[in-house]
Length: 165
Image (cartoon, rainbow, N blue to C red):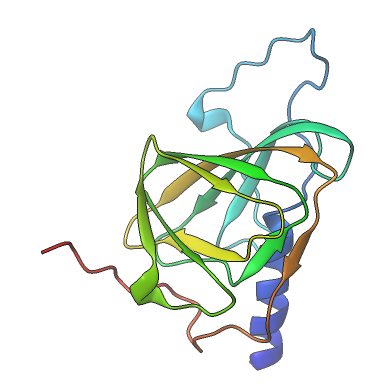
């Protein structure tokens, strides 16, 4: 079971960094996608899904992607080789920094908010008790590097966040 969790965590981190583009790639092509047309895919068929809307994160140039976190799913600590600019499209995205998951330190980021994940900045993020959709813009090529060992804590599900008193 631990081997599966480690493999799953590696694939989830990889899914946040690389995927095949799904939309027109020319700067002269107009692209229109309704929310229901965004081609989300998950490497394991469950958990966080990603859709590349423009460009290719593994090649030079601008890329745009969306990540959808089902309720309770999160990434483990990792960093990216390039800056990434994120806008929360739907839900509340929970973010934390550092190489240890500490859910008590997670910061809620509401829909419409912007977050910069600077190159080399170790972070982790995910969904609380509702689905979250985040749009990420960056310049490739970008690599995503996991930090630390196996998932911490043992459960890979984000605890239900406490509501502000």
